[in-house]
Amino acid sequence: MKVLSIIPPLVQINTPYPSTSFLTGFLRSRGFRADQRDLGLQLVLKLFSGNGLSRAKEVIESRSKINAALFENPTIQFFLHTFDDYQKTVDPVIRFMQGKDPAIAHRIASRTLLPEGPRFAALDEEDLHWAFGSMGVQDQAKHLASLYIDDLTDVISHGVDSEFSLSRYGEKLAASQASFDPLLKSLAMTDSLLDQFLLDITLTALEETKPDAVLLTVPFPGCVLGALKIAKIIGAHAPAIKISLGGGYVNTELRSLKDARIFDYVNAITLDDGERPVECLLEFWAGKRPRENLFRTFLRSQKISSAIEYCNSPLEHDIPQGETGYPTLDGLKMTDYISMVEMLNPMHRFWSDLHWNKLMLAHGCYWSKCSFCDVTLDYIKRYETSPVQLTIDRMKRLAAESGSSGVHFVDEAAPPAILKELSKQLLEQKLSFSWWGNIRFEKTFNQELTELMSDAGCVAVSGGLEVASDRLLKKMQKGVTVEQVARVTKNFREAKVLVHAYLMYGFPTQTVQETIDSLERVRQLFEQGCLSSAFWHRFSATAHSSIGHDPEAYGIRVERNPSLTFAENDLEFHDTTEVDHDALGVGLRKAVYNYMLGIGLQEDVRKWFEIKVPKPLVDPALVRNAIASKR
Image (tube, rainbow, N blue to C red; front, side, top):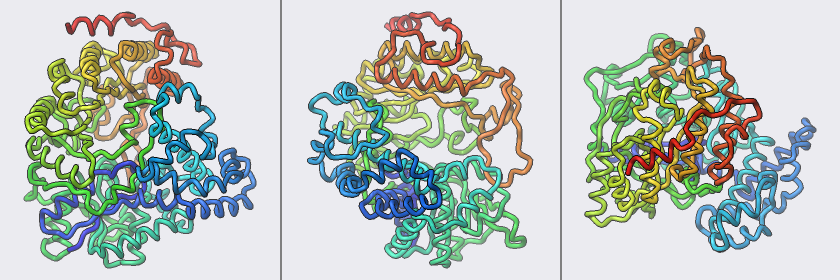
């Protein structure tokens, strides 16, 4: 059986999402003829081209005849006024961002080549010089080109398709949607420019690979619409092809699925790790396995077309991590991916710049206690490590395929013991890789270990500081303290490793005072050089977390939707503290953005808020004293 795994629009454009490379490698190890395509990247490349922009301009001008207000949008106005400049520069800019024409960087950096739309308005020459100096021409050009692409993205979202962005497509139609109806409504409309482009690239992929089955990976809500549009195209033009849906979105949001209408588009939906469920499903489609022996799979009921059947044989089990084969990039055009530098912060570019080969050191999370995390689901609770030498072999294979020595370990939290052994083995085998990943800021990361990791190629780590409040860290069972985080992050920074902190606000029972105190601690961490970057996330109660299972224990009341038939993840809840967390969020994000640029680190944290907030009660030397105590 020939199998095609597809990354649908849209996930990321600088490097392929790893699910298809893992599945393709596994299926090949089991004897299947497996291939893969990134149709999200192909859609972006088709859109951001001379021909694509011409087609977009035609759509905008046609829509403007019906909706005159469209002409009043400054982004649209600028695009139409400077269209000739956009059309002649877009193909060279894309080639530059793919690394295919570095010489054009000098023209871009001179700011004489590109039309500069609204996204350039806040650009400051002093900031550019601070970030790139006189020699950082390539990076400076990449930053300017990224703003150029962001302007064009705004043009498409304002004038062509409101659901479009570079990292998501139709996200609000799928995220925690109790009903399938919004997606159905959008799927019924198939005459947009993006639909036409998606039709072309989907049919091309089918012609190139001639699959018997297609596997659609949907890691996030922002690629569900694209996946289902692809499924609809396949159903209309090649109805004999079987289609399966899987991935992170399915695993977290569709576990309570009741609406069988989704099976008008796909034949099956698999949950959790895809290797064994997909293998069983392919055997079933090939007539080699009975229906009742499928593994974690939703199908339309054979008896009632409006009902769903869940097949989960007790005889089946997941494939051990050491037996899943070698992930492969074969089938993905690695030289077509686009690197972007949207923010003047060295750590933030790790998510959007360059190609990173993606691997895992272990399945699941070795801690698996955080109350806000999906600790009841397989991807968190089932912890299983991979042999270190196997991981190194996979690193070498992917580097040979991609031409890149960069590795992003996508673990929920990379285990310190495994990182220590990996670092030792890389040094002993005299292997040169650059790698990064997510960790817990636990005390195991002492000066000795962080220096060892740095010597072995670790360039960055990210981790959750979350609320930066010891009371709330204990309540969320994070297993760390603010002082401990300060010591660990300083160890990494002294070892020349970049550090990113995930921050959270609006946790149940969090007061205004605690939020302000948290920001003060974050300010001190930046001031003392412990953090390279950070980002504030608004707390969300999820259905599969400890909080979602027992909200009363955390002081909130969850409002369940009785008419739920489709997706459920983020839960509506009421916090009795009645704090306006959204208003506080504006100031928090403004503060940390400036801290990342080295601005305002000596100033009172209250300056960032437009609303009145209390004075921080934190010891002004808390972080400095914590760092000193480690010595």
